[in-house]
Amino acid sequence: GGVGKTTLAQLAYNDDRVNKWFDTKVWVTVGDDEMVNSSKVMKTIIRKVTHNSNKCEIDEEQFELLNEVKKVLTGKKFFIVLDDVW
Image (cartoon, rainbow, N blue to C red):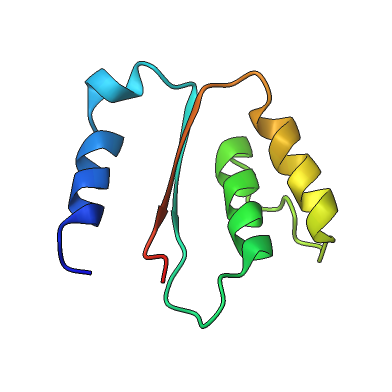
């Protein structure tokens, strides 16, 4: 930590010269949980790409979530930042 990775990612994420190349972008702050909760990360990606806060309220299996992430991102150029991964 402490070498400026988040700052560098923020600069790229907010730069119009970078953004023009992507259809969608998602910033996910993972946090310092003992284990990365991949279901939580996938649900966050789905919510932010679809702009629907009600999506994925049910506790779906990881395989179903992975298919949903694939569905919402297929055919799109996307920029996803996973920040604060331990």
